[in-house]
Length: 92
Image (cartoon, rainbow, N blue to C red; front, top):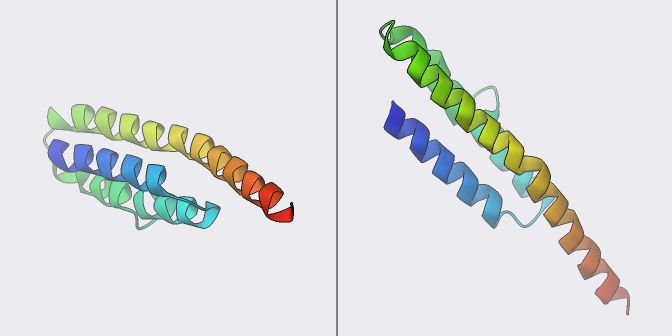
């Protein structure tokens, strides 16, 4: 499960980095953090873990969620700046 969580972290970071529009950012957010998202699916499986594993996996999952959420505003802001620049130069 740790491996799956780390793969989600890497994939989400790559998806957000490659996103070129607000819509793509939102799609990535839904894919990883949404109600039926990949991270949510992992969290639903935590009940199957042993009592020793649950806090470790839970902490890692929370760190990954926080990491993805922290990237969202930064990436959205960067996307908005890029679009503003495109609009500015398109008008000239």
